[in-house]
Length: 119
Image (cartoon, rainbow, N blue to C red; front, side, top):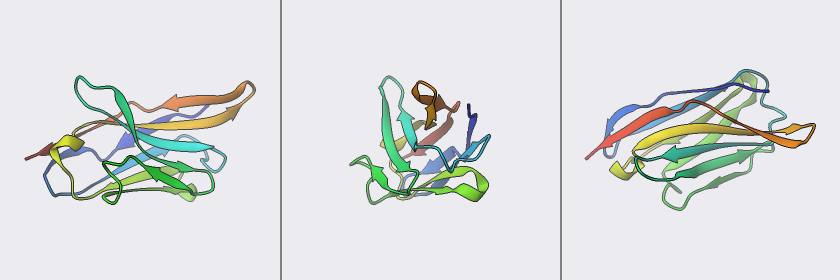
């Protein structure tokens, strides 16, 4: 089992930057995948970026080139550096981890951190 706690959200003007953190309660070395999701008001929860245990990354088309996902195994933390923010990036950003379990895999979620981008 793993608990995830996000931080770093806030209010920022369009064009600004924020760095989100997702701190895990245990080592993330063996976590298969970690992802950031965004949930905007009235919309579905969409994946923003993901990173595998071997460091491979992928991004949603609308953030590619502006956001960077990374993980620091020594600090048990995943990050999302968000640059050139747009109002449409507004939403609650949630951290997700997929780990091996006795039944195959298990998925864990954090509580989320609010990001608001003003125009």
